[in-house]
Image (cartoon, rainbow, N blue to C red; front, side, top):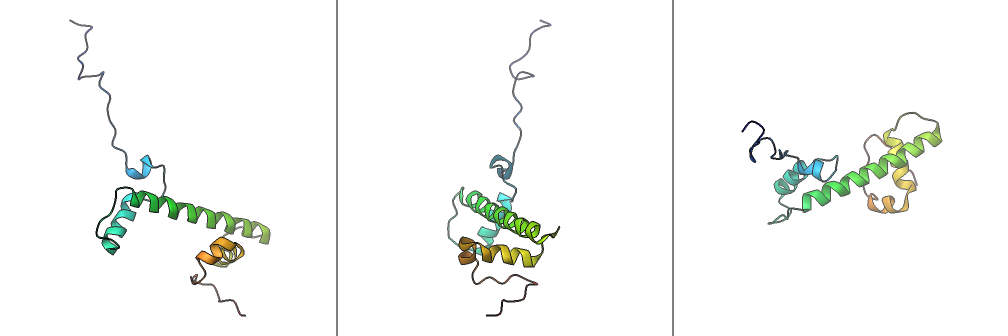
Length: 113
């Protein structure tokens, strides 16, 4: 019959392959985080959600630091975020200062005192 469609033909939904990064609505690559976790041998076994959670946490920390550094740049009258502004933003935030307390940021002279 001319007006009849087969069930397997055009009525069937086409399933698109989507990456784990896009399904989790992240910017940081979940597959790359998983590869780094596996290559680093941090554990014998790795759950399916571990790289997703870690990629989300790293993305959140990065966004927060860049937001604070952007605020520092605007307050200083600068148009670009520099390593000094990132360092200042981290050290002016109590939680981030404790978290990154022993971290050295490249191209920033250590504080005297």
